[in-house]
Length: 179
Ligand SMILES: [Zn+2]
Image: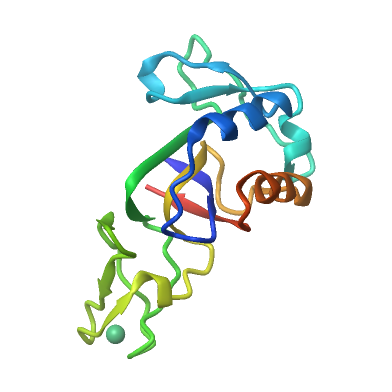
Protein backbone atom coordinates (compact mmCIF):
# COMPACT_ATOMS: atom_id res chain seq x y z
CA UNK A 1 0.00 0.00 0.00
CA UNK A 2 1.18 3.51 -0.67
CA UNK A 3 0.78 6.49 1.58
CA UNK A 4 1.63 10.12 2.14
CA UNK A 5 2.75 10.58 5.73
CA UNK A 6 3.04 13.85 7.69
CA UNK A 7 5.08 14.25 10.86
CA UNK A 8 6.71 16.92 13.07
CA UNK A 9 10.33 17.69 12.22
CA UNK A 10 11.30 16.99 15.84
CA UNK A 11 11.53 13.16 15.86
CA UNK A 12 11.29 12.97 19.66
CA UNK A 13 8.16 15.04 20.00
CA UNK A 14 5.15 13.01 21.06
CA UNK A 15 2.04 15.09 20.58
CA UNK A 16 -1.34 14.38 22.14
CA UNK A 17 -3.71 13.33 19.36
CA UNK A 18 -6.87 15.03 20.59
CA UNK A 19 -5.89 18.63 19.68
CA UNK A 20 -4.55 17.40 16.34
CA UNK A 21 -7.80 15.59 15.61
CA UNK A 22 -9.73 18.65 16.73
CA UNK A 23 -7.86 20.76 14.18
CA UNK A 24 -8.43 18.28 11.35
CA UNK A 25 -12.14 18.04 12.18
CA UNK A 26 -12.55 21.78 12.48
CA UNK A 27 -10.86 22.31 9.10
CA UNK A 28 -13.06 19.56 7.61
CA UNK A 29 -10.01 17.60 6.51
CA UNK A 30 -11.57 14.59 8.21
CA UNK A 31 -15.19 13.87 8.99
CA UNK A 32 -15.80 10.76 11.07
CA UNK A 33 -14.13 7.70 12.54
CA UNK A 34 -13.96 4.65 10.28
CA UNK A 35 -14.64 1.19 11.63
CA UNK A 36 -11.80 -0.67 13.33
CA UNK A 37 -10.97 -2.69 10.21
CA UNK A 38 -8.89 0.30 8.99
CA UNK A 39 -7.02 0.86 12.26
CA UNK A 40 -7.96 2.25 15.66
CA UNK A 41 -7.80 5.88 14.64
CA UNK A 42 -8.65 6.07 10.97
CA UNK A 43 -10.97 8.73 9.62
CA UNK A 44 -13.11 9.31 6.59
CA UNK A 45 -11.99 12.43 4.73
CA UNK A 46 -14.03 15.60 5.00
CA UNK A 47 -15.40 18.16 2.56
CA UNK A 48 -12.36 20.39 2.59
CA UNK A 49 -9.78 17.64 2.12
CA UNK A 50 -8.96 19.01 -1.36
CA UNK A 51 -8.02 22.39 0.18
CA UNK A 52 -5.58 20.74 2.57
CA UNK A 53 -3.89 18.57 -0.07
CA UNK A 54 -3.04 19.64 -3.59
CA UNK A 55 -3.28 17.00 -6.28
CA UNK A 56 -0.74 17.31 -9.05
CA UNK A 57 -2.49 15.41 -11.84
CA UNK A 58 -5.13 17.18 -13.94
CA UNK A 59 -8.07 15.13 -12.69
CA UNK A 60 -7.42 13.15 -9.55
CA UNK A 61 -9.50 10.00 -9.55
CA UNK A 62 -9.35 8.84 -5.98
CA UNK A 63 -12.03 7.16 -3.97
CA UNK A 64 -12.84 8.92 -0.70
CA UNK A 65 -15.11 6.27 0.77
CA UNK A 66 -15.23 2.49 1.00
CA UNK A 67 -17.05 0.88 -1.92
CA UNK A 68 -18.90 -2.38 -2.17
CA UNK A 69 -16.21 -3.64 -4.56
CA UNK A 70 -13.58 -3.02 -1.88
CA UNK A 71 -11.44 -0.81 -4.15
CA UNK A 72 -8.65 1.12 -2.37
CA UNK A 73 -9.81 4.48 -1.03
CA UNK A 74 -8.06 7.36 0.64
CA UNK A 75 -8.43 7.82 4.40
CA UNK A 76 -6.45 9.41 7.19
CA UNK A 77 -4.85 7.47 10.05
CA UNK A 78 -3.51 9.21 13.18
CA UNK A 79 -0.77 7.65 15.28
CA UNK A 80 1.22 8.65 18.35
CA UNK A 81 3.51 6.44 20.40
CA UNK A 82 6.24 6.61 23.03
CA UNK A 83 8.90 5.14 20.73
CA UNK A 84 10.54 7.04 17.90
CA UNK A 85 9.92 5.03 14.74
CA UNK A 86 11.57 5.07 11.33
CA UNK A 87 9.11 4.04 8.63
CA UNK A 88 10.24 3.45 5.07
CA UNK A 89 9.39 1.09 2.23
CA UNK A 90 10.30 -0.22 -1.19
CA UNK A 91 10.62 3.27 -2.71
CA UNK A 92 13.36 4.39 -0.28
CA UNK A 93 15.77 6.83 -1.98
CA UNK A 94 18.21 7.60 0.84
CA UNK A 95 21.91 6.81 0.45
CA UNK A 96 24.58 5.91 3.00
CA UNK A 97 26.75 8.90 3.95
CA UNK A 98 29.78 6.63 4.08
CA UNK A 99 29.79 4.74 0.77
CA UNK A 100 27.12 6.84 -1.04
CA UNK A 101 25.24 3.73 -2.09
CA UNK A 102 21.49 3.57 -1.72
CA UNK A 103 20.15 1.71 1.26
CA UNK A 104 18.26 -1.43 0.45
CA UNK A 105 14.83 -1.83 1.96
CA UNK A 106 15.08 -1.22 5.72
CA UNK A 107 13.05 -2.85 8.47
CA UNK A 108 10.81 -0.62 10.58
CA UNK A 109 13.15 0.58 13.33
CA UNK A 110 12.10 1.97 16.68
CA UNK A 111 13.94 3.19 19.76
CA UNK A 112 13.85 5.72 22.62
CA UNK A 113 16.13 7.94 20.56
CA UNK A 114 16.20 8.19 16.77
CA UNK A 115 17.26 4.62 15.81
CA UNK A 116 20.62 3.75 14.28
CA UNK A 117 20.70 2.59 10.67
CA UNK A 118 23.48 0.34 9.46
CA UNK A 119 24.51 0.15 5.82
CA UNK A 120 24.22 -3.25 4.13
CA UNK A 121 27.05 -2.31 1.74
CA UNK A 122 29.81 -0.89 3.96
CA UNK A 123 28.52 -1.50 7.48
CA UNK A 124 28.66 2.18 8.52
CA UNK A 125 26.18 3.13 11.23
CA UNK A 126 24.45 6.53 11.39
CA UNK A 127 21.64 7.85 13.52
CA UNK A 128 18.45 8.09 11.47
CA UNK A 129 18.46 11.77 12.34
CA UNK A 130 21.67 12.34 10.34
CA UNK A 131 20.45 10.78 7.10
CA UNK A 132 18.84 12.70 4.23
CA UNK A 133 15.69 10.66 3.64
CA UNK A 134 14.64 12.50 0.47
CA UNK A 135 10.96 12.39 1.43
CA UNK A 136 10.89 8.60 1.40
CA UNK A 137 10.93 7.85 5.13
CA UNK A 138 9.24 9.19 8.27
CA UNK A 139 11.11 9.50 11.56
CA UNK A 140 8.64 10.40 14.29
CA UNK A 141 6.60 9.51 17.35
CA UNK A 142 3.48 11.29 16.14
CA UNK A 143 2.31 11.17 12.55
CA UNK A 144 -0.66 10.87 10.27
CA UNK A 145 -0.95 8.95 7.03
CA UNK A 146 -3.11 9.41 3.98
CA UNK A 147 -3.48 5.87 2.75
CA UNK A 148 -3.64 5.00 -0.95
CA UNK A 149 -1.92 8.13 -2.18
CA UNK A 150 0.91 7.44 -4.62
CA UNK A 151 4.36 8.99 -4.54
CA UNK A 152 4.14 12.55 -5.84
CA UNK A 153 0.40 12.33 -6.45
CA UNK A 154 -0.49 14.97 -3.85
CA UNK A 155 1.31 17.38 -1.52
CA UNK A 156 0.11 19.00 1.71
CA UNK A 157 -0.84 22.64 1.15
CA UNK A 158 1.23 25.40 2.76
CA UNK A 159 -1.91 26.35 4.63
CA UNK A 160 -2.19 22.90 6.21
CA UNK A 161 1.52 22.78 7.11
CA UNK A 162 1.16 26.26 8.64
CA UNK A 163 -1.82 25.21 10.75
CA UNK A 164 -0.02 22.09 11.97
CA UNK A 165 2.99 24.19 12.93
CA UNK A 166 0.85 26.71 14.76
CA UNK A 167 -1.02 23.99 16.64
CA UNK A 168 2.04 21.92 17.60
CA UNK A 169 4.73 24.60 17.89
CA UNK A 170 7.09 22.82 15.43
CA UNK A 171 7.48 22.61 11.68
CA UNK A 172 6.09 19.56 9.86
CA UNK A 173 7.47 17.49 7.05
CA UNK A 174 6.11 14.75 4.80
CA UNK A 175 7.17 11.65 2.88
CA UNK A 176 5.83 9.01 0.52
CA UNK A 177 6.11 5.38 1.50
CA UNK A 178 5.26 2.23 -0.45
CA UNK A 179 4.89 -0.77 1.77
ZN1 LIG B 1 27.54 2.40 3.24
